[in-house]
Amino acid sequence: MILNPRTYDPTHLDAESRRLLRATVDFFETRGKQALMASYIDRAWYADFLDFAAKEGLFATFMTPAADGDGNANKRWDTARNAALSEILGFYGLDYWYTWQVTVLGLGPVWQSANPVARAHAARLLDDGHVMAFALSERGHGADIYATDMVLTPTDDGGFTASGTKYYIGNGNVAGLVSVFGRRADVPGADGYVFFAADSRHPSYRLIKNVVNKQMYVSTFELTDYPVREEDILHTGKAAFDAALNTVNIGKFNLCTAAIGICEHAMYEAVTHAHRRVLYGKPVTDFAHVRRELSDAYTRLLAMKLFSDRAVDYFRSAGPDDRRYLLFNPMTKMKVTTEGERVIDLMWDVIAAKGFEKDTYFDKAATDIRGLPKLEGTVHVNLALILKFMPHYLFNPMAYAEVPTRHDDADDEFLFRQGPTRGSARSASMTGGSPTTRTPSCPTWPASGSRPTGCASCCARTRRPRSSRRTSTSCSPSGSCSRWSSTAS
Image (tube, helix red, strand yellow):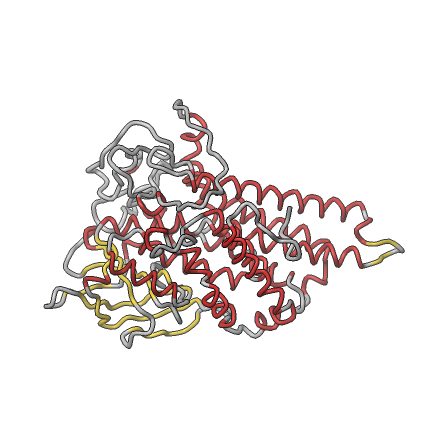
């Protein structure tokens, strides 16, 4: 049930997907554990992996929607196979998963855009082996979108120049396309938001540093009078805000499968070490308390996998009248990742001091597993989302069709075509219901959802929410309430 590199063959997927996933496993197995550990310790940039991905067309195949695939039948955005790749990359190291993950995020605003030039450019970059970046966060206020200091100033030729600094931006050192969130200097409020595409190789793009002591590159960069042309504009106004949150909903689902892959590799080490270690004349795995801890860890890991696999089906079956994936999404991001921490802790009691040794995968897993719940803006944000959506899921009187298991070779096109914040006027809340319209009291509340009962109390027409008001748990994750902005970290 857990990933076995020697026998891995995802027979539920099509032939080309199976080939690419198997080739990815073989790439890491050929490198060997010693080389993987050495590059982690030396914080070596993973150029060899990116070269492999470019040669095989891995990212281009898995991350290009069919509509932008220039007739290539293997290109599509398929959550099932994306989850499988995410698990493999987590198995061999969080840093390899990270460069894939932030490329997913960087492409989110592009594939939601109606800009054909930007879409075609992104597809070409993927074909050429480039990775992408998602530039939302800033050092002074994290992902508080309302307070962004990336400012676009109009120019006489109808374009803009962008100036400002972004912080905690993965792949910002090499990204062929950086989706950057900013605001217009001449348009106040939400109507002034802009998402635009930048290039890390441009002379007006200044890479400052890597802000983490890791193999991955989590950059801070500065734009100074960066020229933004019409063909670089991905979204404007409220659509830019919506694209940011929808990108997070789509892209950060991969946190759960990264946690699964990390735990699977760590379990192999823990069990192998315990079984080979003899104390008092017995293998450690014969001790009752060790068997209990390993059984507990294994059961939790299987539950992580089963729940995440089921969540994939809700993503793949999403539509304007069924948005139950909006509940499964925070549950995977919170519960599966925190369970991953518990699994590692249980196995650490078994592997004991061996888990600190630098030539093991386990000591890397024990460090990296802690980051996944925190990459999503902390656990309490996702818990609030779960509390928001759970009553709809459990007590809505409407009947819904059973969601099938989805392994067909098709795009999950609804996620980009409409998504949770881009629905049509006939769309309703997470699980359907009566059609609704935009509520004037909350200017950024999407037409796709009913107005939350507490929104007028905590959201203002200005860029910043009222700090004097208590935040209501009924506020929308798509609305203009500050408690939700951290989900887009």
